[in-house]
Structures are given as structure tokens and as C-alpha cells.
Length: 555
Image 1 (tube, one colour):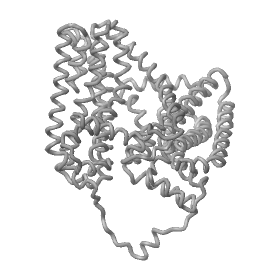
Image 2 (image 1 turned 45 degrees about the horizontal axis):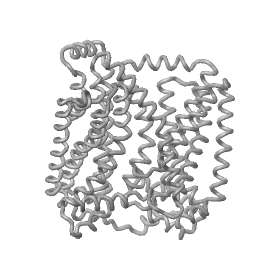
Image 3 (image 1 turned 90 degrees about the vertical axis):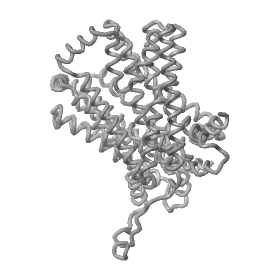
């Protein structure tokens, strides 16, 4: 067991280079922690208000335990989806696998250590999704010491079962197929599968919660017919969640202790299954994983001449960055595809509802009037900035190079041009996101041509602003010590800074326009002028200070 813990510590330390001990980086770590905490506060407060309202409604029906069951189910599904990607990254595509195999370690030691690493990442997911629920439920229900003790134990146990399920699925697939050697293709397929699974679950839940009168009557009959009927309903996707909810419902009683013991045994049994299956499948599937499959194609002189084109240094480096975003699955899923999917996925909760027509009619009514149009423009601007913040292309532009970043210093390109080439893909993808969201709004809300023109005019400086902020963040906090491309984007905390700036900038704009009472034209002109000046100032700062910041990265 000691070897498992020591190996886990080493693997976590290697994976967490953002927190590594570098000389003079203490203030950056402190700033990073503060930014994370500040960025999470609004989300946590919103979650607490929502959970509190749900608890009050369910308490009137005597079904408050359903809230716990729903929370555990949602977290379990999220952990399973993310677990597929984490297992691939930690178990198969990290570059430490073949270095560990010759060491005097038993298979159980390697499996256990890698499982702990993946579990630590999943605890971060559980902390954001399950933490507010457990605390809010405890406060609303007047839970005592035993409730919070049980809640901590449940929190530690919940991610184990879905992560084991994800690991077993991946190990079976990798053992009996040969796609593992086509790493890039398999990463892309698995990432798309995880996205489709998450979207499908969201659609099912949304359709179930927006049923008609008949389903409501059936639900009333179900609640009246049995105790904890809603709990049984919401835990159908993850039956073990019922044990966790019942253990917390009446914490401290002998019955709740029994439920907790059974839930603990389920987690232990799943770990045993993982070790047995992993010992049989993992090492047979991971051997030779570093080998790559490639098609060897002879390129003639004519074809070679078509491939080689003379371009400017700036444009050449831009095309290199652009192609890397599309050809590398981890970058494609987290940077390129997110710019297209996020605006589309934003429609799903609305389109899945049966009363979507009435909601759209009410929205169209609120857009009438000059001041209402100005506020709507401010909200649209904030949405565009948030879309740019959610796209991590620019804020990971330096980090995505990894150790190959230092090769850039040997290229015959000015540092200013290099930074500009790195920020251009993020601006383009964010602009595509903006236009997609605007097209959806035009389709659903029948926006006027004047509003569309002003929205585009204001949105472009906002998109440029958030991407320039992103490249500045990555210049100061690059994550270059990664072992797989997924770590550079998914385990990089820099996007939180960009998200925080986007939240603050968008929120301030909406609040200011709400109180200012300006017209649509004045609002558009003011936003364009303000953010165009900010963009110019940040650009001049990058041109003046950027080369020096690039040189300091080597230190």
C-alpha cells in the first residue's frame, strides 16, 4: 500500500506542473488560487439558491431525499463521462507507462496509483457539483455532526463506482481492438462519444421534467402510493445513489448506518472488480501503445509543389497553429469543437421543453422598446464575451506547445508576430461562436436588422478583448510540463482566469447599461469605442512587453 501511495504522489506531482515549485512563482500561485475562489463564488451562490428552492418544494411533499438522489445521479453520470477521458489520458496515453513497467512494482501498484490519480481529478468534479448540494441540504434539514460526517464519507465514495465503470469499459475496448495504436483517432472518437452521452442524458432529463398534465397526475399518484417515490424515480440511472441518499436522510440512525455500510461495500466491491479486470486486461492492452500507425505515401514532385507555398512568416505560423487545432484530438475537442458546440448546446434546454413557444413569445415581448433594446444588446455583448472566455484556444496557446515551445525561439519570426499568430485562431473561433449564437437568436426571436448590425459591431471588439486577455494569462502562467495533450487544455487552470474576466466584464456592462438608460445607438457606440480602446491598449502592451515575457518563460 505504501508503494501505491508513493507512486500516486509522484504521478500527481508530474501531472500538476502548474503548482510546481518554481523560483519566484509564489505570487502567481496565490493569484491563481484567489482567481479560482473568486470565479467559483457566483456559481456556488447560484447553486445554493437553486438547491434551497428545490428543497423547499420537495419538503412540502415529504420527498426531500429525492434531491440527494438526483445530485448523486447527476454527479455519477458526469464522473463516468469525464472518467472515460481521464482513464485514456492517465492509464494509456501518459508517457510514463512504459517507464513504470520495468520497475520493481506489482501490477496492482501501478493500477492502484493510476486509479488514485484519476480519482483525484474526479474529486474536483464532485466538489463543484456535489459539494454545494451536501452543505445546503445539511443546513436546510438541520443536520448535525453525524450528517456532515456521513456527507464527507459519501463524497469520498461516490466517484469510485462510476470511475470503475468507465475504466472497465475503456480497458475492454483497448484490449480487444487495435484502435489504441491509432491514438489520435481513438481520442477523437472517445471524446465525441462522451459528449454525445452527456448531451443525451441532458435531453432525457429535460424531456422528463417538462412533461404534460398527464405525467404530472401520474407523478402525484406515484408520490401518494409509496414513500420516497421520487427518490426511486431519479436514481433509476444509478441505483447506488439511492443508498447514499437514504444514508444521509436520517443520518445517525441504525438504519442509515446500514445504508452507508452497504454503499461502502459496493464501492469496495467495485475496486476489487477493477483490480481483477485491470490485472487481466490493462497490461495486455497498454503494451506497444507508444507505437503509431501511419500511412506511408509517396509524394511526387508535382504534388510536393502544390503542398509548398510561399507565405509571410505571420501567416505561415498562423496556419501551423490552425492545423494543430484541427488535427490534434485533445485540442480539437476542447478548443475547436467547443466554439461550435457551445452555442448549439445552449439551445437544447429550450428546444426540449414543450412550452418553448410560450417562452419565446414572452422573450420577444420584452425586447420591445428603445431601452429594452439597449439592455438586450448589453446582454448579447456579455454572451459573446462569455463564449470567447469559454473557448480556451487563446488562453492555452503557449501551453499547447509544451516543451516544444523553446523551439519557437529558433524560428525566423518576430516575437510580436508569433504572439499575434497564436491569438488569431482564438479570435476566429470565438467570432464563429458569436455568429452562430446570433443566427440562433435571429431565427428564434426575429431580431431586427439594426439590432444585428449593432450586435456584430460591438461583439467583435469584445471577442478580441477576451482573447488578448487569454494570451496574456498564458504568457505569465504557461503549463509546459505536460505528458499528454489533454493535460495542456483540460488540466490547465488558466481558462479560469479568462472566464473570471469574462464574467466581470460582461456583468459590469449589463449593470451599467441597465442603470444608464441609454438608447440602442448610444449603447452600441459606447461599447464599441470602449472595447476598441481596451483592445488597442492591450495590443500595444503585448508588442512592447511580450518579447520580454516570452524570454522569461525559459527561466
